[in-house]
Length: 123
Image 1 (cartoon, rainbow, N blue to C red):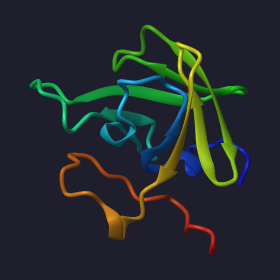
Image 2 (cartoon, rainbow, N blue to C red):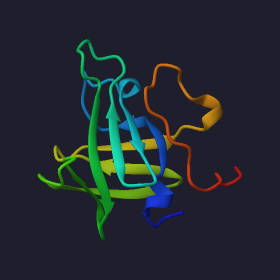
Image 3 (cartoon, rainbow, N blue to C red):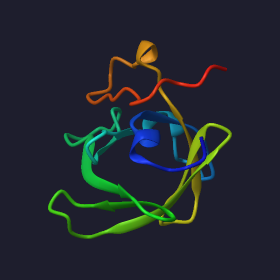
Image 4 (tube, rainbow, N blue to C red):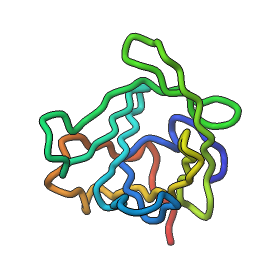
């Protein structure tokens, strides 16, 4: 699976590796891609009221375009697959490698969760 599509993105993802320097904690950030183009960026351990940030997303030739819920303020981010992991490079230039979370491993502290729209490949 190397082609980016809504079907290949659908699901909830956790960061398993990142180039973002400390004090970044990769275990505190989750990405939720819905099959209908909604995206939620969740930080369940933030010590503030707002922990989920919502956007719209669409697939582009080079990755993903995120926009506000009103469709404004587009931000294009390079995205690719690397050995089954989703690699996103943020506007800061650092990349993070994401792994889809299987439904059986859904963390209870997440307020969002999307299962993949296609079966996971056998290991």
